[in-house]
Structure formats: structure tokens, C-alpha cells
Length: 429
Ligand SMILES: [Zn+2]
Image (cartoon, rainbow, N blue to C red; front, side, top):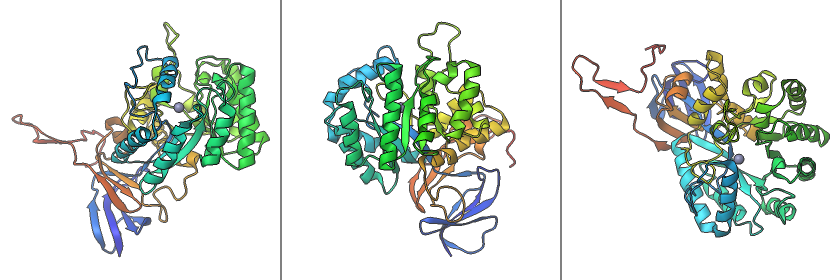
């Protein structure tokens, strides 16, 4: 006897007509024709059932602040940072918490239940840290929230940057961040990478740095990050976020760099929506795409996952909390449209990002947490194409969000009466 059975589901690995039996907070069985009953049964015929989505890179202290205190007129990264600097002194804990909770509601509705957010530690008041620690606790029943101490204005470049970051970690922030390309010089950037890796090693914490978020082909902090990762024994615990300079680097140099990153087991976290929007801004034509080398990094065995980064904030006026929107953009920017490519892109929104975050008991096997999303799509390619309705979202075995399916009633003589998402010529009905 199960508490809940999802009947006849299609799974991301391609299996179809599978039952998922849930007992308490865990998945108890995953097989076709599961015998036995349940208190609740959800029919998922022709629907994809996936582990809940994971966002490995976000800024929850900035989200939903669009227009405060003004709009980003140029739309550039640098005006975004300047604008955030104008907003920061005006931030209150109450407003930060309210906006973050609103974003978390949106995330749940999209089946996004695990988020790593960078928290700006540049303002010594650390009101951002206080607010995000409160949010982490309040959303814990429905969202796993990880916090990164992020020195937005530079670890060395900001006055009190060094002290503020340490204080944020003392207050309970989980992960050491950094922004070496924003320090005053390449040398100070490299020094910051070393200092921050040392802190992580001393405190037993993971590292996740904004690294080389620039079009400068000579911005090479990822090389230093890989070397310091090995030196401090942090293999597998370090993430390099963005890495956009790799898009512009010399190919010969990259052929040396990628094996160094693989040796250090760096988790690679590009942010396709933001990278395509903010990079290449100084180019005329041809205009660079600015996303890191996803296909080549995956081929070298590196763990690549995609972040949403921003939703309606000083840097990005768009966004929806939908990781499938991120995947949709990734397919285009990385030009990964092949059959196997799409599976890899979907993994980068789910299992790969779960690995980057070190989530335990994540997935679709017996024994995993029953954190699931049922989509109005038949399979992974259709989910990535349509960004479909999340019909139900489960957290620890309980439905916490439902959305009615999108069904259009056609009133055209001689044509079908309904369109139910789909229209997929390869779907087996
Ligand atoms: Zn970021």
C-alpha cells in the first residue's frame, strides 16, 4: 500500500508507461504495472514525470526589484552593477524577504524546488545576508535554498569586502563566493581566488565563484581556480559560474585549460539567458554569443549545469523562474539541437545541477525524495520545446502546486475540437 501512485508516466530516460509509488516522503517503487493501491492516484498517461528542477545559480536578494530605484537604461552588466549599488543602501530586510518569498512561490509553480543563490556581502550592514538566512529557514519545507557569500563589488576592491565576507560566513552562509574578474587587477583577482579557496579549506565549505564573466580572452581566473582547487584539496567542491571568457579564448590555450578543470573536478555553471543578453556588448559585428564552451566541457567529462541567474532585477528585466526557459535558450546558444544533446541539456537542469549542489537522495529511483514535477508534455524534447504547464509539483510526497492543463478549444469546421499541448509528430499515441 502506497500513499500516492503516479500511474503510467513517461520518464526522462525514455521509459514510458511507468508507475511511481510513493510512501511517506520517499519514492518507494518505480516500475510498470505497480501492484497495490494507494490513498491517492494521479493519472500521468502521456505525461513526463521528472525530478523537480534545480537552479544552481541565482540572485534572490535582487530578484523582483525591477524598476527600483530606476530602470537599467543601457541594459548592460556594468550599468546593472551600478544600479544595484544605488538600490543597495535602500534595501530593507522586510522588503528583501517579501520579494524572495514571492519568487519562491513562482519557482514552486514551475517545479523548481532547489536553488543556490549568491548573496551580496558588499554592504557591511549585511541586511541581504540577514534576509536570505530568514528566507532559507522559512522556505525549507518546500525549497532547498543554499546561500553563497558573494562580494559583488570585489573581495579586495570593496572597502570592508574581506571582513564582510567572513562575517557572512560566521552568520551561517554555506558557501564561499568570489568575483576575481571584478578586482582591480588580474593579480588581485588571482590573489582573491587563493584567499577564498583557503577560507573554504579552513572552514570545510564549498566554493562557487562568479569567474571570468567577461568577453576578455585574457581573463584567466578559471585557470587559477582550478589550480587552487587541487592545491587546497577541494576537488569536486568548487564551482566556476559563468566562465564566459572561455567563449573568446584562443583554442590552443583552451586545449590546455579544459584538462586542468577536469583534474580539479570543477562544476561548470553557465547562465545561458544572461550570458547571451549581457556578453558581446562591446562587439559590433560579428557579435559574440558569450556562453562558455558547453559541448566541449561536457565531452571532457566536466559536470555542467545551467543557472537562471536573474529574474526581473537590475541586470535582466525578463525571466520566469522556469528552468525549461533556461534549457530552451541553452539549446540555441550552445547549438545543441541533436537527439542526444537534448537529453544532456535536460540533465543540466536536473541531475547535473543536483550534483553541483551536493543534493542527497535526488532523482527518480526508489529511496529518493519524492520531489517531482508532472509536465503537460510527453517527453524531454517536447518539454524543452514547449516549456509546458507544470500540472502538479510534489515536495516530499505531497502535492504542493497544481496548474490546470493548457487546452485550446478550436471552433473550425472539419478540424479537431481540442489542442492539448503536443502536436508532436514523433510522439507515440
Ligand atoms: Zn550571478
